[in-house]
Length: 162
Picture 1 (spheres, rainbow, N blue to C red):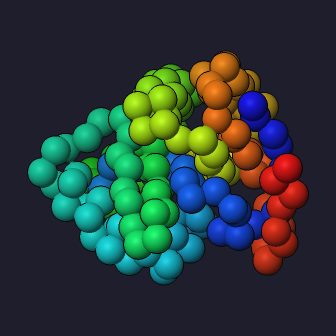
Picture 2 (cartoon, one colour):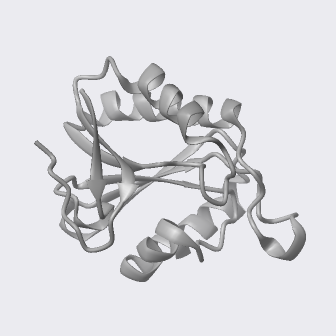
Picture 3 (cartoon, helix red, strand yellow):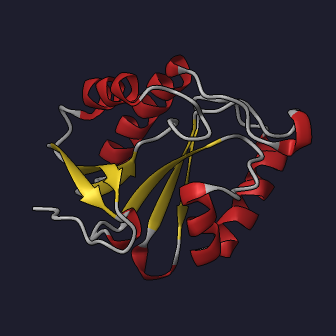
């Protein structure tokens, strides 16, 4: 079940939060920055993972923190490692589709019952929300999990995840 909600994803009741990043991302903008501030070890672990495994756009990397929180990083953007100023590159719809397919497999494997996902790859990634929304529904709609898509950001507002 996919339900679109309005609110602040950081106030979600979901223990699993999804975000979109680039390989070697500095996580210094938007949701990535907020998650870096809340979970600094996640970014340290992510950069270590990237140096060891050289992941490609379209892959995912999941991180688990204290209290059972999980952050799933969808690598939808081109690497920040080789771009100008170390900034993440643009996302592509094919990277989003592939990463969402990988996310679906991960959700089943890990038996995730609920998760929250923002408007991935539409900010720094530069994609159109309608295209990304269609991909989310195409790849995740048939899963037995509750999936809350935060399509409208409202800082400090708890969404109605019912």
